[in-house]
Structures are given as structure tokens and as C-alpha cells.
Image: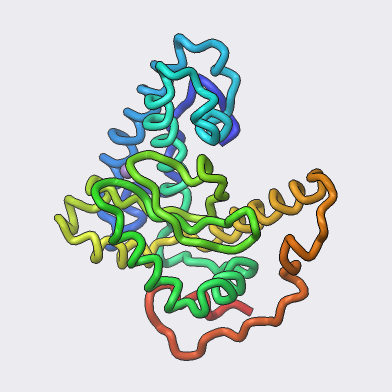
Amino acid sequence: MNEHYPFVNPPLPYAYDALEPYIDTQTMYLHHDRHLQRYVVELNTILRDQPELQNLSLPELISDPESLPEDVRQGIINYGGGVYNHILYFNGMTNSQTRAGAEALYPAIVRDFGSLEEFFNQYKRKALSVFGSGFAWLVLAPDGTLEIVTTRNQDTPIADGFCVVTGMDVWEHAYYLKRFNDRAAYIEDWFHVVNWEVADELYKQCMNNIENQRETAPAQPSDTLGAPTAEQEPVPAPETYTGPGSGLDELP
Ligand code: MN
């Protein structure tokens, strides 16, 4: 993610058929090799004539759109955002047989959403609420709390100051071949293939970023920044929920 122009389309971190039966092979092929590939090509085409932008990483390019030259701004939002969003989306899924836990993320989900079940309910509502094309994200807000937010088209959560933990593409191209117009069914599919190990790693990186910013920020009264996670009450795991993602309950 820290590379700069010319950008490349990284290969999927698994086989095209790895997410079967939840996400079908042809969708994965078209989504990665055609849709994401086009975003990469279009982004490079824009940057070819913008030497002052060619050393910027993808997050640097898209996190502050107002700083971009006006004539290429929307193109970089669309195609740079498209590359950024899709790399997170593809890297954030895994074969359901190898679903792993989320030792740091899971307690934070229960802390901020009440329960894993409520987390999935809220995620589903938000993902269904996207009108047209967009994404639904689990993000860490600057105050250290988890939120589920949506973005339109290829807008990105980092442009709104959020740090991404995981994200679901709800463009129709992500599910139309298998689920036709049934986005709710695709959302349930996606819950089965979330890579919780990757999400946990991104969550820890987001937490580190916040802590580093606090250390370098001008002195502020510490009680305005919220209590550190370590001082919070341990959250008991729910005992009965067996829906999507309930494998997280098996964490130590
Ligand atoms: Mn997509």
C-alpha cells in the first residue's frame, strides 16, 4: 500500500475459487482482473502527466482530495480510491476453512457494539443502506472507537479521517453473477469469508497510529482522550450466538 506510481495490480492472496461457495470464481476473476485492473490502469494514466504526484503513496494521494490539482481530483478519487478500496477488500477475505480469530479486535467489537450479533446486524443494515454503489466499512475513529461507516462509489474512509479495519464492496459487480439483485444474501456470504486475522492486524495498526499521534500531538489533558483499552473491564464472550462470524467466540 506504500508503493507509488506506477501502481500495479497485486495478485489475489488466494486462488480465484478460494472463497467458494460464498463468492464464486467467475466473480472473483472479473472483479480482480477486470475491474481492479482497470482502476490501476486509469490511475496510472492520470498520474503519467502529474510528476509532482508520482512519488506519493496511495493513502497520501487519496486521504486529502482537496490538496489535489482540480483537473485530476475526481479522477484520483475514483481510480485511486478504487485501487485502495479493492486491495483492502480482496486482502480482507479468506477461505472459510481457515477463518482465524481476532484477539485484539473481538473484545473491541463487543465493547463498541454490545455483542457480535449486534455488530453483524448493524453491519448488514449499513451495507443495505448504501444507495447505488459503494462500500461498508469497519473503521477505527480518531477517538479509538470502532464504527461502521459507508462510502459512495470509490470514496474512501481515510478521506474522512477513519482508519480501515475491514471493508465490504457492495457494488453490484461484487455479487450480481451469483446473487443477482439480492445484496442481503451477498452480505451474509461476505460475513463467512471475512479474514479476521487481517482485520485484527489492521485494527492493531490503527490503534498504534492513534497512540503515535497522541504522543506527537501538543499536550492535552489526558482525560479528554478516553481511557486506554487496558483499563477497561474485560468483556465476556457471548455464549449463544452461532451466526456468521461466531467462530470468533472460540478465541482464548
Ligand atoms: Mn468492486
